[in-house]
Image (tube, rainbow, N blue to C red; front, side):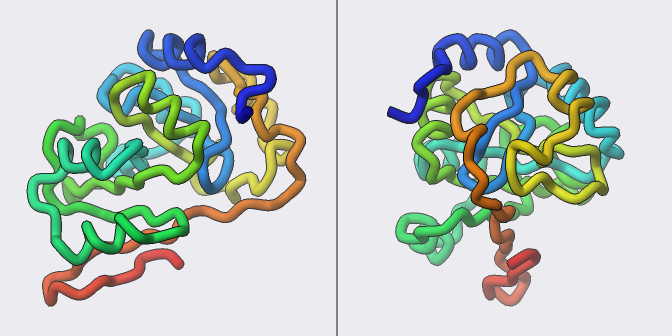
Length: 190
């Protein structure tokens, strides 16, 4: 069982009420909120001291949910996402239904189908995408383990997930890619 000490329904309610959580994703520890709630995203930006226009990674639970926010799905990307076994965040140039607050300055949005069972179940309960921002101030090194998260971040959220706190295995951020103008896959972060 992935939630030995957390009530996932309670966590989902915190998100739906505009709250912030600190949680383990399929990559690193993150700060999360409802990706469609502009006020929650503003709180997240203030906590991280993140400048406007940097955008956030948005997590979805499935290819079906992803298609609700992507205007045109490249068939090669769809195939890649269906079979990819590692966390892969794709940047989409013209998303639909996502607020500007989660988009980059050019209007694009970085979206990842989560592979982690906890994140997937949380998104299913919330029934909407959630934000994933590294659990640190903007520009600081990401925390590879729970123990590396600053007390400022932990005290600034409404709930800290207990799942995976004891893990000492350092984690890495996801690979980020996009399809360029030549219709080729371009890696922005490997």
